[in-house]
Length: 377
Image (cartoon, rainbow, N blue to C red; front, side, top):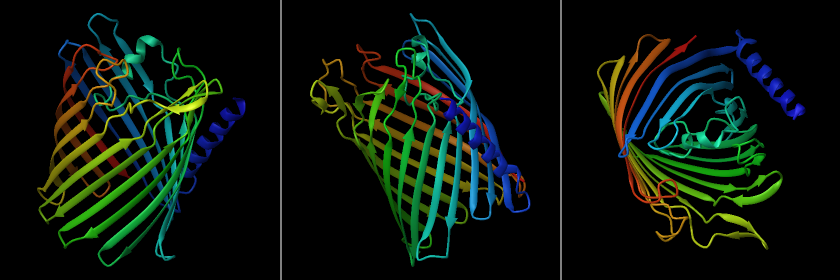
């Protein structure tokens, strides 16, 4: 543990050094921050609110890019018939660095290294677990993890009207105390493979295809393997139509997962039926350019996560989840160095019965709003 602490200190020093030690060579520095709000109420008058202040720092040094990301988050959930839960804390610190090689080889290359420094909140008491068990309601549902390292590589090639790319990454995840009920939790490592293809149909139309496959390692508790998440496959298509005065962006995606595996008397075995439902997402946005400095954006997002394959009377049954969100934003470029954004949205989420509310469907209504700015030095 002491060696790990020293390693984290060294990494923080190196990143701070990269930000401030080379002002002559740096192409630019940038800082981005804002204030975000998310609030919801369900059909039982349970309520939740989350506000957070994200901070992102970036520095470009020739072919290198360094970034640091963190946020201060406040989350409060009120439940009928149960105690409220509140958490105010910084999240984990995300450090990322990339090195790019462009126009020097037959293909362009990007080497990256991401590091998660565990400055967030872990080891949550059982009374605060409600802050984690309401997915898709709040932007942030992970408040802290262990020390993680994520090297990755991407290559791409453009020719005529085509673009193609391949990528691979490895996420090594360190041990941490997830909650007071799950100590010394060591999540499995993850290997990812990605592919992208794009075609410029015309001067106005571009179409893209994205593929991703993730292989999950085995989770451990106190050194003992007990669970393996099912591998994930995702596919998405994207179309962008651009004109001088407006831009339309359409996205469709599907995510599917294999059966999870559990440790039994004879080793790991897949679950009898799939506990993961199929996920489908669709979104569209329309951006209107009022002038060279101001644009208006409207968006509509739909998500459907199908029920899993267990029967409705099984304790492992998870019903479907549907979310519809309508959003709007205004983006303004104040100067060559500073731009800001203000946004707002409303959403409805229908969550069928599951282990958290096994007797009925929950219906949630919510809103979100935010203001953010980015300054380039």
